[in-house]
Length: 357
Ligand SMILES: NC(=O)c1ccc[n+]([C@@H]2O[C@H](COP(=O)([O-])OP(=O)(O)OC[C@H]3O[C@@H](n4cnc5c(N)ncnc54)[C@H](OP(=O)(O)O)[C@@H]3O)[C@@H](O)[C@H]2O)c1
Image (tube, rainbow, N blue to C red; front, side, top):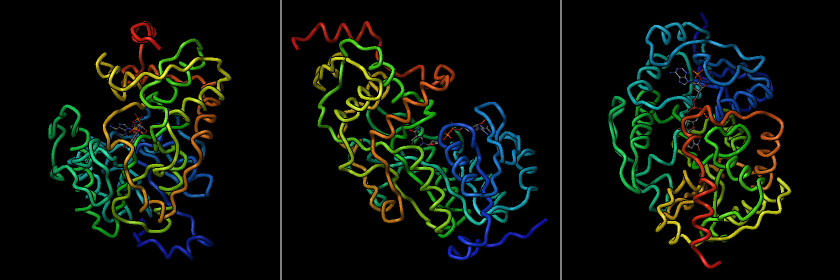
């Protein structure tokens, strides 16, 4: 068994060293994008999952197991050591604490895929990495936290506890906590952008939510993946928001790119926020990517940008997602969350009919 090692200096690594990466998960949306790009860079990639979701990419070493089973983690620890662990499937603090503790001497860096939902002010306030986070102990079980109307969610509390667990075990210098806002792009199984593309491709009168000039800052999964690998290469530690910049694009732009990509002749009818709110349209889910809370698209990613985050254009993301939808058979129905996404055609017609547009 090899000894673990601090990672060699970035410069040396660039030319002579094959990075060894363990991805917890690695076969779904975010994890798969990271695995795919790491393989393209010639990294040595191991994935750990149960074999229930997605597929294994050729070239990865696959370790099957359940992260909630102690014996499976013990078996994983016996594998060769890694320079970095990327945890895309960590959702429960006590579980992340267990895995991080087991891996402390087996990996140099632990990168947790966290979320902007860890902020106490999400989605009401503008946010930077210095904003307050929700309090959750590093050993909390899956029951800690609760959903509140228009405020913090149980998911946010739990992810905050996961961050604390990684920090506690790996320390400030070896813990990387990426906090993406909403992630879109090819293979998005939640189905937010796919819903818009599908709806607009069907044509007719399309209900468009709120103000077309509303600024939005979703991040492309491929840009998040590239930044994840860069953070590992450059030994970037601490929390980093990962969103597109403030002046990135608008909701009007998003739907225009959907029209272009699908070559649709749809007629977009922009319905004011207050009408949709009064009609009880569920934000974020029933009307994907639409949310009226002022902080939603006010997340500063200046720190990530300074550390090398590069965001491609929204038009490119929309085109690539449509291309993926046309050329593969996305099984959005397979995701629990995909079933919550989208406004029915009846309800759309009802709302449009109620207006003099
Ligand atoms: N989507 C967004 O807009 C968004 C925004 C912010 C942050 N995030 C974060 O991004 C991450 C999403 O990552 P993702 O899309 O790659 O996938 P994911 O849905 O979080 O995780 C799925 C992966 O984990 C594996 N897995 C699930 N349960 C497991 C278990 N009990 N034991 C071992 N492996 C298990 C799955 O394979 P098997 O099922 O085969 O085991 C699969 O490879 C999450 O951490 C989320 O919090 C997402």
